[in-house]
Image (cartoon, rainbow, N blue to C red; front, side, top):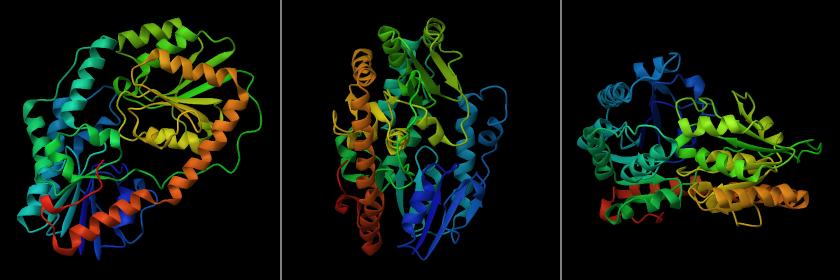
Amino acid sequence: MRVTLSAHRPFHFVMLANALRAHARKIDIFSSAPRRFFKGLDETIPVRMAPAPIHIVSRVLPFRVPHSMVDLDTLFYDALVAARMGRPDICFGLATQSLYTARAAKSRGGAFVLDRACPHRDFQQALGQREAERVGIAWQPQPEWFRERQLEEYDLAEAILVPSMYTGRTFPAELQHKLVKAPLLGRTKIAEKPRTEKNSVFTVGVVGGAPLRKGYLYLLKAWKKLALPNAKLLIRSGGGFAGFPALEELMKQLPNVELVGYVPNISEFYQRCDAFVLPSVDDGFGMALVEAMSNYVACVASSNCGASEFITSGRDGIVVEPASEDQLAEGILRLYESEELRREMGAAAVETVRKIEAGRGYDRAIDSLMSRLGSDRLAVNQLSSQPA
């Protein structure tokens, strides 16, 4: 069996490609990223360049490239992959950038699987608009043609990979039978032991860009409300909050909040923290949560973070409702007030990660999907996948 993967950046496609080795005679990855960025990829799997010029240039430009230009770049990349990929038996494509690839694969007798880590685009756009209003910026909706493009990807797919029940629930009833839950586990390094030295200041960490989706508005409001003595909040976010009026104003009022730049070894960041918070209002999986848990850090996370589904709230972490500054404040305060609770939750969190990693949830989901797709190319209405 020949399998082709398309993703203009690596994302989690190293995991996907490696999981497919047991099922495919030949695997090709098309990407605008060089192979060196696919860390951990099986050395027998080639990465074939398909340039996405604007995506590449945008990384070095001192200003943000307009969304319209990025959308057009996606079309160019997608068309190039469709023209070059040949005749795969199964094609896996990343959502928003795989419509032409899907059409080409199916017209040549192949099957198409869409990888959609984020919620359904209509749900995500509505949520984004709400959050934009709350932080005081103008919302820029995707153009209608781009919406139609994404909806056609959903329709063409034999299956849609989603990483969590949170993502799965956002899809309409008519698409539920296509969903295959494949949690993005299997790439986490677990710390050998917890940090032994104590911080002189209670330190809370958070990791993530995309200020609208990560729920920073509610975290900063919670932090202001708490006004904890001898405490600081570390925000690892590359872009900062420039251009987000409500966030900028809150930052001015909170001298004990620090923006942290690039960290070469993210585990070192987690090791600095007494507690970790992921207040996302939209996070299909939220790998940062699993990483923090893997470093013996007690965590507070919103239920709109897919990885929170592995937490038993109160035992190996604390799960709160999304967009709730009050619940975030309560969770942080519990950890602030009890070093023993932090230690117990951190130890339980590591054990949870060990168990879910040993369960090979992602690999098993891919194994199940491939056995059904590869046997006799079941039609969409015959594809019995694990509901998300």
